[in-house]
Length: 237
Image 1 (tube, one colour):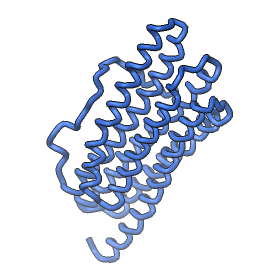
Image 2: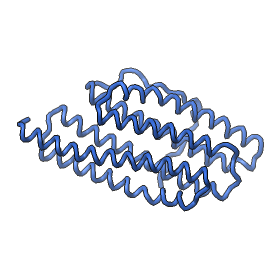
Image 3: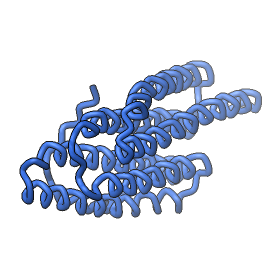
Image 4: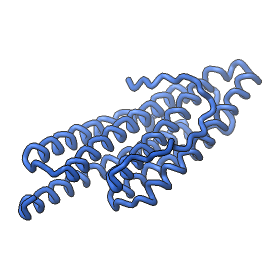
């Protein structure tokens, strides 16, 4: 690539990466605030998170438009094209994670009208903080091209699965002890599963980083500890 074209590509990529990090920050904030809304039974905050998902969607659209423009105008080399395609995959994962945060907020609105389940909201908040940590580190690994950090994210996903399994057992216990808890526990279970799925998306971003830096996808299966094997709907309406 000619030096002046290289400079233009790098400048375009910097602009796109700034949008990606902004989008990641919005998703992280939405997840933490949605968990806070659940814990505090704050309906106004839950509604704010639900409405805020539009900004995340708009950023995804903007990034995809910019990536298409870069491909059309800069004719990137194979390695540069891989970078652009990685960006598009990352924002797709972020957009889906934003949808999960929105779902958490929507279910929080329903749960605010129900009898609370002792200890559940705090446990979910802790799980959300762990997942946000994975998401933040996966994006940092992308920006810095840090292979070891990306692998660390991939390994830590198993810890999120363990937290989800513990919550799943806890909800089953509450439901068996008192049938009146069934509806609330089902909503809480869907919330926990949504957060676990964000962890999977964070791990997917880390795997994209590994591919981007090394040129090859991870050869081994990622560590998984989700033992529930219960089919979960991923509705994001």
